[in-house]
Image (tube, rainbow, N blue to C red; front, side, top):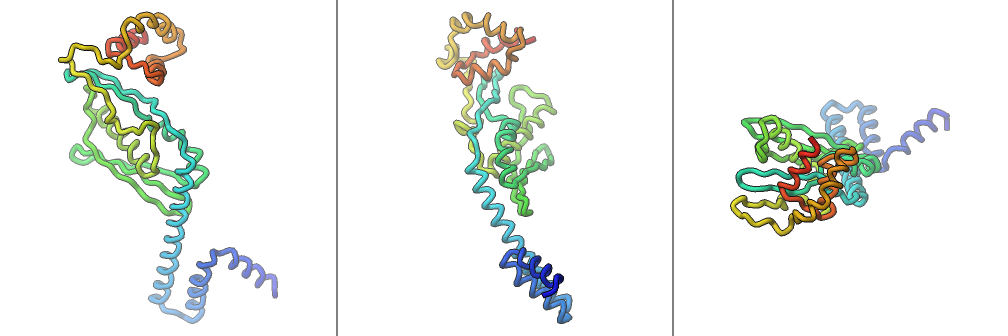
Length: 251
């Protein structure tokens, strides 16, 4: 066997076993002077085979990815008051999700990107997940701008986009946030009800700790938001008045 034949043989053996018959058929067809229609059918057969293989690799990568996922904590906090009352809940921020899943994405050869558009006030966000084999799938959601909390026009659009990105990403990748995150676990307090919610931190305890917490903010050890997050993780839910006092310290 010549060196040239040996090289050709080695190259052929490196192909996937099931791909070799397809490639061989195309080679034979070319050598026998097959017409363009016959070649197109053979190429279509090869493309469908490769697409099927890519999908199998994508599914295997997704299975491995989900097995590697860590628990993602809710570090974001929404806390505002309107004429309807106070709204408070925690959520997993998209930047925290992105950081948590990066090692698993790298290990499995997966990546993601977003596309977005707006038509007649409706925002559409699509999250596209692609495997290095070339196969991709997507999740898509739509929403109107998020005007909660008295946001202006630009902030309401940005908030909706962030929300849609978060849920298309977690949806397509099968990500579950600790405590499950549907932003529906918000606690709303009606201003007409003058009684304090039982799960808010007692004012007496707040006043005892306020000097120490204020010092942490003024010394730069905490921002108002980071202190709020820290306290919430300790199951210390501040009332709106208490939160406002901390905000005054941070100004």
